[in-house]
Every structure is written in structure tokens, then in C-alpha cells.
Length: 130
Image (cartoon, rainbow, N blue to C red; front, side, top):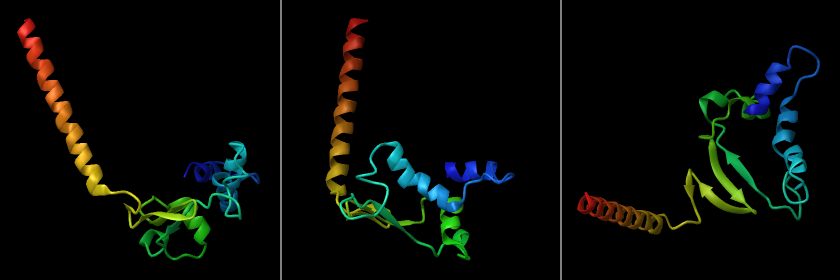
């Protein structure tokens, strides 16, 4: 991620970011920067409880001598197994758990057809003006 690239740039001197610093930047420090540390940034009672669960059995994450460093420097997003928002499961195995995907697909197709019909009518009205 971005913060891990920064840490690589500062690694020449003594002032470099550790994996823990990168994690804090993405969580606690990020929440503080947004002035939302009372709501987000850590898993604490009274906070939102947003987090994800990783599949660590991916080849590029093994061996896991330092799992945090692996996450900071090697994760792509495909390793995310589950996503929780406000403590509730909202996605598992890359699929949303709280959405009616069939209904959404039907609505998208309906909108698509309406747009095509609108464009067709606009084209016909332009031809009549020419």
C-alpha cells in the first residue's frame, strides 16, 4: 500500500515506518486525521466495528513469519474473505451478503432498456429535423 511504499523510501536512515506504523496510519492515525477516532480506527466497545478477515493460505503470503508485514507489503485485496461493517457481515467470499443481487440485476437491465429506448427516440427525432 501507499504507506508501505513510504516506509521503503525512508528505510535508508533511522527514520523509517515500521509495519506497525503503517497499520496505525491506516487505522488509528487515519481516524484521528479525520477527527473520527471516537467512531472508527480501532476495535473498541462503542465504535463501529468495521474490519475484514483475510485468507492467509495464499502463496504470496507464505511463509507467514511476520503476518503483519505480509499484509502491509503483499496484500492485493483478493485475499479478503469476509467484510464486517458495524459488526455485521456484509460480504463473504467476494459476494455481498446483504443485497438482493437478482433484484439489482433486473433493475440494471430495466434501466439499460429505458436508456436505449430514450436514445433511439432522440435519434429518430433528430432525423425528422434534418
